[in-house]
Amino acid sequence: MQRLQDRVAVITGGASGIGLATARRFAQEGAKVVVADLDETAGKAAADEVGGLFVRADVTREDDVTAMYAAAKETYGSVDIAFNNAGISPPDDDSILETGLDAWRRVQEVNLTSVYLCCKHVIPYMRTQGKGSIINTASFVARMGAATSQISYTASKGGVLAMSRELGVQFAREGIRVNALCPGPVNTPLLQELFAKDPERAARRLVHVPVGRFAEATEIAAAVAFLASDDASFITASEFLVDGGISGA
Ligand code: NAD
Image (tube, rainbow, N blue to C red; front, side, top):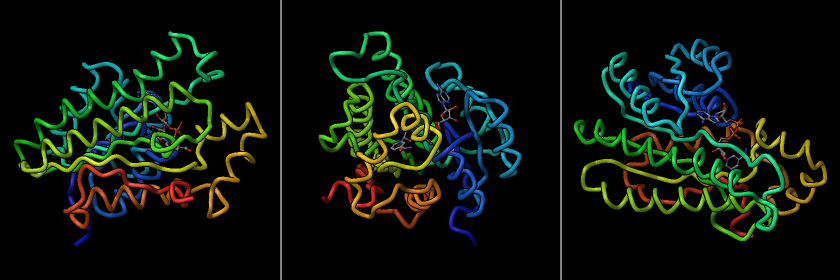
């Protein structure tokens, strides 16, 4: 019997990076995986690879989010795990003096409002089942002054932390665990694009990682699989660090 045998998992942002690595890991551990993403080509390829279902969803749209969970329930019969992971990095200079209101709002919408929508619409399924695990992707930057000058991004991830803690406490007695995942820098397209714009940024960031390297997405996926599983049955409302020691330094 595998750890996630027949659990139904919906992964937002499952077409790339951390989400894709987690789709693979969940499938290896026996889960039925729903890959939800804006990117249809990569999303379908990911779902095919893991023998799962692809749902095209813009997680900032409430009707897409409700349709995504409805499709999971209709296809596989339940929604046991929600990995609310889709996110973006701000497009331009994200320092407080430069970030415009439109850019700020877009980052809040994709990184924070989406998590509100996903939690709001998955909890009723989990309530009915009396069980569920929600993992919301925050970031190490939400926990510390990381001097990244990414004000909209950092604020959005701080919101994810606070919301996850609140929901974890509120629904603990109903068997629904809610945890915030705080990865350090991870070698994914999101990070690569950021460093492509500012190559010196990679070296500056690396200095602060005690293990001396960035994470691979598979290392984050291993932690997500743990949080999703019954091995983490006493873990809720936590800020789960997978950051190569950054927060401890
Ligand atoms: P990525 O760019 O590789 O993947 C993000 C995925 O989200 C993409 O497939 C993209 O199409 C999808 N997406 C974006 N907007 C969407 C929307 N509106 N609706 C549906 N899907 C959408 O990025 P990643 O590095 O794997 O990041 C995943 C999560 O991890 C993000 O929330 C990110 O903020 C967070 N994170 C990343 C790092 C890092 O260093 N890479 C560190 C900490 C936290």
